[in-house]
Length: 354
Image (cartoon, rainbow, N blue to C red; front, top):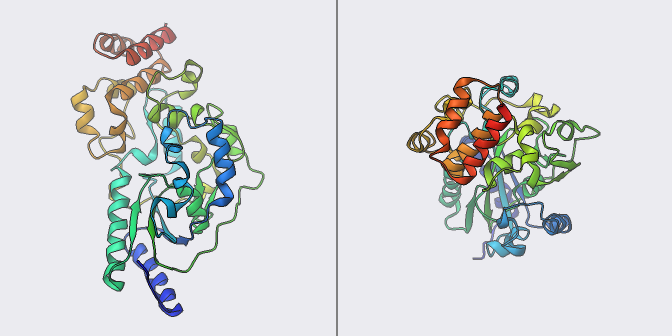
């Protein structure tokens, strides 16, 4: 589909899209082109070294991930958005990490599934554009397809990829979600964000499993977020102690990043903690039946890991907790009713507590 606009029409539409985005609840909207050639070599090396672990989807689409126009024909611009999600101050999260009996769940997963929230808002943004200019080509993405969202967002001026590889905004930290609209609209481009990490190595120093192997280098196979969410089998023994009470994801590299002193607490009700998941005991969650798990994670990103991985992660957390009769009896009670992966994790926990 060929679209023709005057320079003034392009400028006006670009400005209007950003205004609509803010009205819809995004904290920032930026626009980039589709050229990602500057990261192709480093990404190919990361794939060659198999640092993606079990995440085969990181390479199975070939060059489509790095060349948006191959994924969606006709794409010449990407509209990137970011939305804050931190439900409370960082210190309260750090306090939970220091409490070995409380389950730590990554802050992004405490509320409603962000995929649904951002996707709906992005579709509304596209509808506003359609109303203004009639038909145009677009596709909405929220961490749901082969999209290099962070390098694209950096080109769109939303932030830079820090040494932990997460996106950081100098005015808002890193506690935000990203979403994209691939489009054929010839919109004005934003200036790419510059790196402001400087000599800081806080994220590297604090990583529990040393998954950040160097500045801007992440080995997913060692990352607690990968191990507790993406990895399907038993968690390698060498990482279990370091996991501590982290049962779904890990936020350490963000919790201790100096730039997050500028992070705002979200006002989005959808991202507020559900079922007291920000303050639940490990043993309490471990005792959930599968029916309770499905009920209390309905509409949550947590549900995607399934009950087996939920129990596996909690068993590791309990094995790292302070020994108690309640914990021991809960672990033993689950031994006869679980999978091989969960049972092995329970056995490790019991041995670790003996």
